[in-house]
Length: 170
Image (cartoon, rainbow, N blue to C red; front, side):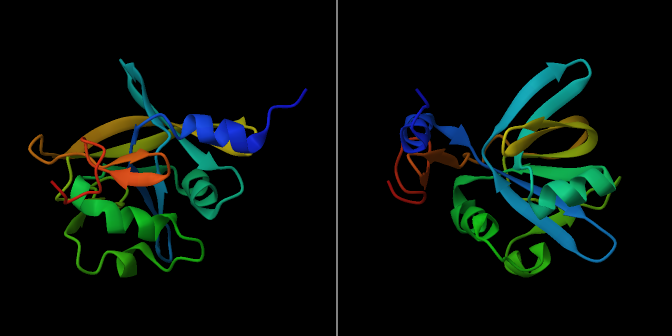
């Protein structure tokens, strides 16, 4: 008996996950995507895995370019997370017009400066995984680290703060 896809999705929405912004700079523009399937894989060497739509443009560009930025979004970045989760979005730079950011030194990817953390990563490999792909990334730098910024979470299909409330509410 096949598992019901809606039941599977509902079950996984019960798990709170951090929210990140993956960005890649190609020869023409900047590409970004909101991701919540991120996990630490290894400390030596420093590796993280990121789940991406296997047929999405961000995965295609990442595979071609080989370097990216991965920003851990703060609770003040809920609008940014929504913008980068939308289909048909414009350039990353246009979506970040009022948000402070900088570029990584190695690949020039965008990372947000008002975030809990940002990683500069080099693609180790992409592993097919059903309708998604796992990008195994080697962390080569931590250009942003601010432990005073509270993280943004995704829980039950919504962006929330650490208390489970809408970001910015007490």
